Length: 217
Image 1 (cartoon, rainbow, N blue to C red):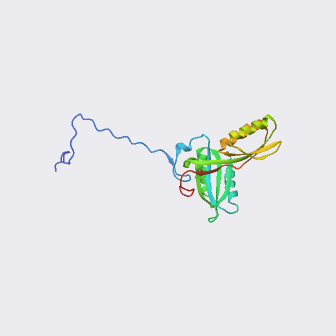
Image 2: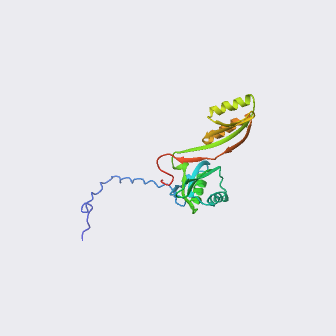
Image 3: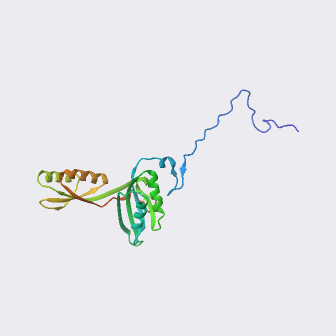
């Protein structure tokens, strides 16, 4: 039986000396890691050794021992907590919200979220720093003792920072300053040479911008 030619099979035979068509380059997909909490994490991100500050919000059951379990898990693995706030936010469903400010590499932050997500009383874990735009505020009560020029200068700086004087005497006063962490830190630093006595801070309270709630990603 005669062999079928290229034209018989519906293909045009290549002309003598013609170059073969170049193959299209296929870009290799970026390496991913699927072992961590909430989705695929680029390996390049996990290899970044720089330290970043994150605010992580949790929605948890409002019951005895939950806060101790959250803190124990973080502290037990050597993670640092810069600030922590907790309060009941839904009485009907008996839910509380915990805001944790912590610093670390991307890999450490992902490990923190993974471990928190495995705790039974934790319903939601959200990284407000990575998930999108958010609003964060902190309140501090700052006691300053001073007279004369230092007292006048402290009051002038307090006015610039829009701090309220919530207690006053002839020897001292207490400022209430509200803002992001950098603003509060800056105010405290300026008060040190003017007679700073003590500071009480609430820690960071944060919430995502937009119409969706913490349990609606």
